[in-house]
Image 1: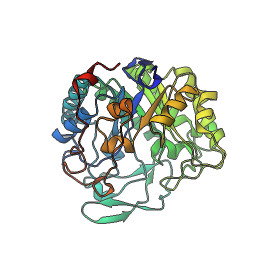
Image 2 (image 1 turned 90 degrees about the vertical axis):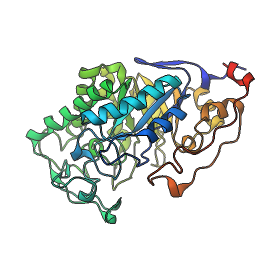
Image 3 (image 1 turned 180 degrees about the vertical axis):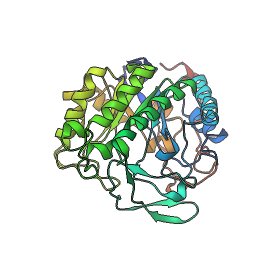
Image 4 (image 1 turned 45 degrees about the vertical axis):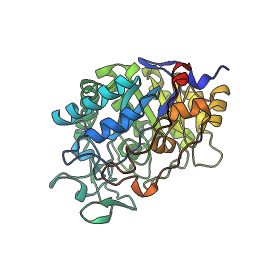
Length: 363
């Protein structure tokens, strides 16, 4: 029987063998140089039957690092290390993009080298804490507000990160514009109290994200750049009184760029249909995310809500998720206690189903 979930798909320059996407997930396994290592090669390689893998949030510069054991794409060593991952994924058949994640104020000095500061649109600390290997749970710190003259330099870091990602073998990049990180901090008035060209009106608050995307598009091409949003997401002390207006304006502004896709999660805001919002304001490909299983993913595609579906939690314990969805097999559950712990346990040791010879011929 025809199954749209396993149809090929073209998103800009990205060619997907199927419409099952692995969502980006921080797993805190980078080495002391903030590089992926042999664990990442195995982890992503195991999951390369996906149509598209969106690799975990990766900082474009050390200033953009916030969590412990998260990778970067800023040094030659990091680029070379990621190349080993992308080689493994390409061998497995998936396309792969790298999510660029500058956390802004969601950071602690204990997770950065000495002297590397924390910056944000405004000097407003996010309420909450994060984990540090050296000090346990620590509060997020008061950031320094970026001077207007510095913003072009941060945008340049995103542009260079996109170039570095291509050198590392990625097919493209995704701008992380959700979860309370730097682009979202510029976007919302609660974290952006600026009175220059990057703050105040909504048109000015969307400017940073738009210019980051423009820079990346100029560097590697629009068909290799995606955008990640979750309208109304309060994570990391964010508040948006009118997310429909905020993200409608952002999507209207980036629509002419011709991006490869927008990845959008369901909105936690009551009454806001984030999927419909993106369809109204964006003409490119749409990747749906948040809480899907095989049946609901198929229904969403049948209903025209999006073009592909990304899976996060199900990809943790099901490296062979595509095979399981094809067969209607049960999905394994993951161990929460090993989500962010160093080492192989809970990362590359989830078993795949046995592959029978007859299954290798399935479409």
